Length: 430
Image 1: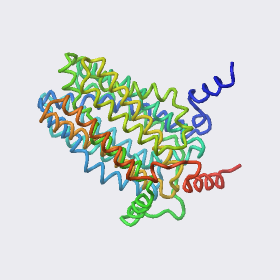
Image 2: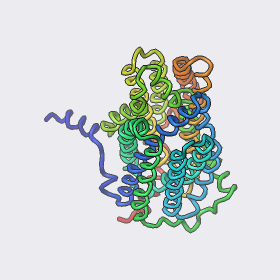
Image 3: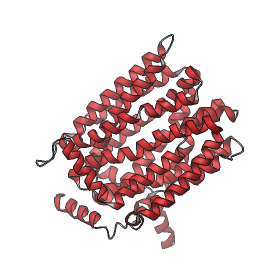
Image 4: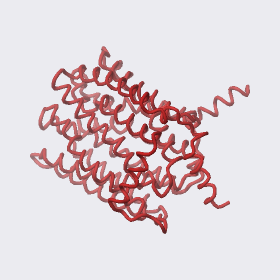
């Protein structure tokens, strides 16, 4: 085999070194796989049940809006406690809370007359608990995976997410149509129970002796650090813009009806994950990219173009292809952003910065789905998709021009990346 072909294959084949080298990462990876499966099933069930109960675009879109405030408050506070307390304990207790919210949704769905307010309230509580947990999960990955394997870990986590995102929504659509939402929520609860068994086996992760206690002052310290780095600001702002203007999953139940394929609703939810999985299976090249800032800009622009093309797709499979392309671009952007975060942010600030990151990648989809619903109410689903995609491209281009430190970021020359690499090498036993 020619040497050039061998090198190409090495760039495309998945790098499994984080799974081989870290037992705790294997447990986190397995837990995340199980949990994501159930979560995506519920992701189909909640908007479907809301549509069946209300028949309203706005009611479906307001599900995301109701989750916004808990996500912001709990995400920031979750970052503060991730740097001040045992991250493993935070993760396990949060997982237990998420199990209880899934059981609550299941009980409500089993009532003769399910209550709409329960979907809003329970969804908000689940989002708050998940937001408390997420910074500890992100910070723990930085601790249990070697510095030079962070890119590979980001690819593996993206692949894990996308496998669940393909299979689970399709199964969720089938379960909701055949057995009702209660069955979907029951499966979600079961996955949280299995995940708890895995997370409990992770070793304790006590905070450092000089860890800052969780407080408004420590939160402000994290915000000042993020605001002082133009490269980090770019990772947040570009992703927020892309999601706010082009995220449109709240429209999927209505698009499925318009396309004459209500039984294929789960496939629409899976489309983005199909594209992302194809990219991640050959995504080892992304872990080797050094200009991640420019990579995020390009990927976010492609995401917007793909969503705009979906607005003029003539049929179901054409729309599926456009959404798959969007998912592939979003996955690449996520790998680049996660690699930048884990390779450049000091460990003592990682939890608080993870809370800020959560605001960027979680608030955007929530606001974006509300935006998509309001625009669909004004001009229809195709209008919402097309204009949203075009606005995304314009916003990403403007931010790329306004943030030169982000656009020019290079891991080989970044002082932050080199300092964190040196610190990890100095504290890792031979």
